[in-house]
Length: 337
Image (spheres, one colour):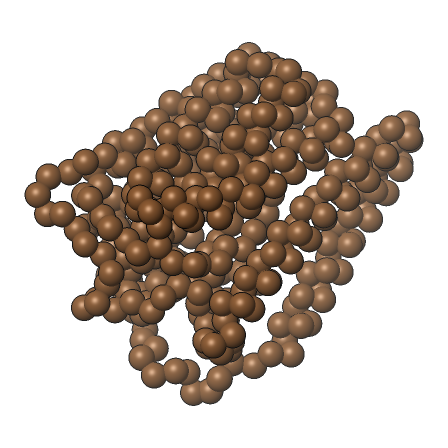
């Protein structure tokens, strides 16, 4: 299960005294099983391809899809056995579209949101095309492909404690700067080399960079939004990200098609992605100085993707409760970084 409704539900179902421990253990298990599932799938496909029997490859795909379906069904069953407190907790409000849209256009939160959405456009220009590039153009095996993505995933969650300490000591805004400049050149690295081992090093760096970027973005984004607005704003943010996915993928597909789906065309797509990612520095340096208290917020992996390790989502119920009058955010009014 995923989405704003799920985040709201878990916040009203899991008691606050055990919430931090519960989600910390849950997050570790999710990371372990996400990696295990991906590696098992990759090596299963590798075994199917090496058998030389096309039908066996199809059977492996079918078995993987069936296993995924069974696991999701079990998850749905477990979710159905839970109930939400009734009535809803006091303070729960219905937020209007205008009120939810406000953070996108005003203040530091607006700049953060625009940075995040514009970064997603640049990322998705290349994102859908890493897989065919690795498997078709570079002829990597499924096992090699799984190791590449797995290395990024491991580097990402391994570096998160380090990034958390850095954010606590120097501030989330400094961590965001590190993350943005770390993410910008990642697609361009695929233009410079086709050597598997160098790409493996690049993937490790990618996982670390994405960990810094996503943690800093989450701290700055969600800590500046009052608790009662988080679900509504997250909903609009997810919609904006989906539109960024469509728009960015369409740009990448157009560039790839114009180049005849050749290796040069793929490299051009990666170059365009790098250039569009660099545009996000416009928003980065429009941010006023912010001082945000770093919080022990739990992230949960949603999916694996090339060049970033995993797509993660913060669990809103693990964020500290904030209100408009007591936000722990100090904004310098004069000047910008």
